[in-house]
Length: 380
Image (cartoon, rainbow, N blue to C red):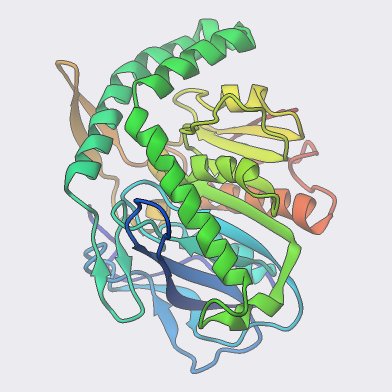
């Protein structure tokens, strides 16, 4: 991939300065067979000053080579703004990193949200506060997950073709049958979602508990009645699962993530925003299975990669080649949508949704006809 040699991330639109802090938690299970693991975290928040005035570099070069010239709008270790702020948990896509959606983190923090980006050891790339880099586990687990992903890709093409044809007028039962096939052919991915959910719940508990962690200075600034979750790809699936897993989570957003979950059939009872690229409506089943307010958004001319900062930091589009069955398939990382427009769309949708369901504000986008031109919206 060719990264922009020198670039400043887009300026967030909110009235607040943005602060940022690295830290990590140690998950040490008791009375189970689980191994202890590190949970890397990166927190973005509204700041009341610039602290030492040091802007965070985008990400460590060991994680994404070529990003040394990219600068964020976030001041490292700046003091947090006074008052109580809504909290949003975030999980990145599989094999990505905590900074992968920094544009969204900064936008939300500038409007008063605390965003806790949670890492998942063994399935992502992370820089710890000590400077140590945690790399993905290339052993048995990663190979098993990759096997699942390959199995899913073969079925996915059939599923997408059906969604674009008969699936448009299919019953909920027919959508459920296709989803069941996708879940059953990827058992390791589905089961591993439980690990990410546990990571998220441990991080949430530690973040809110003044006695359990050295970064307790944040807990008193959190509005515990206004907590949500969002994520990209596999992390988007985790965000939906968290609506079931924790009473503290009031609403969630899935950014282009198939819903890998052991409880995928359980109706979703909290408000959800499901945002997907336009190659297929694979979030239709979770949308139909929602029993609260739900929004399904398709962003025209987008691809999976557009739902990360790659829309912003790539100097040119990257085209990957893979073999599905006996055919070579080429896939561009980014779609034809203008990168700036893609970032704007994600930002306005996230802010509008969370402002409504965590801050109690009237929707300016999702409940109106004032939609971005490249957006197709279905409400429930």
